[in-house]
Amino acid sequence: MIVIEIAASLGDAGVGPVSRNTLMYYGAFWITLLDGMSGLFRGQQWTMFLSHAFLHGGAAHVAMNTVVLLSVGKLVATICGQFRALILFALTAIAGGIGFWLLAPVELVPMVGASGAVFGFLGAWKRWEFNALRATGQSVRGVGLFVLGMIVLNIALAFALQGGLAWQAHLGGGVAGWLIAPYLARRPGRA
Image (cartoon, rainbow, N blue to C red; front, side):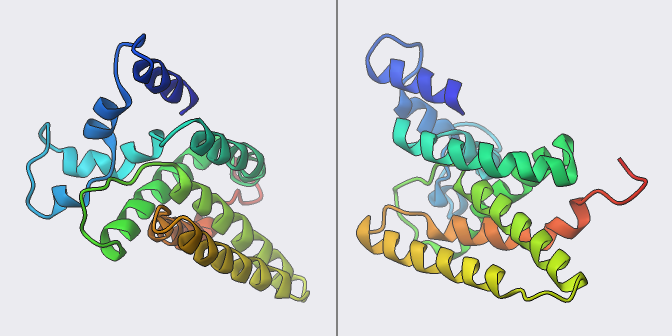
């Protein structure tokens, strides 16, 4: 993601091989491609369900997603292993695209960013925490408060950014992470 952002920034400055707009045309999530609009290449309407997660709107956008992915990703990889963490990233990025497709209005503005996967990692983390607390008879209130906090944060940011937030992708990724997490955790005696 960082390498792609550097290439896009260099392209925007006129010194790189490809512009951000070109990357967006080919890899962003365009709802209109699922509504009958022709893509730039065969299968674009399917590849965008994952490719959007590797493109970002700028350095601040990629920095925010990278910081959370690295911090929560370390925990995720500890619980499920690196390979399964990559699977979780891909599946929750795709689920973020599905959430965006199903819940966002059809418009000509594309969706980009790894936030579906970010919320997928958060959802998985909180599911593992929820399961561990329940197994030991402890309160799961903290998990519920975290989820509520994420909902409030998304609502506040959606209003503050005047629609410039793909909360639909956050929801899709978070729910998918919660649902997938039990199947990805390492089991005793299993690598």
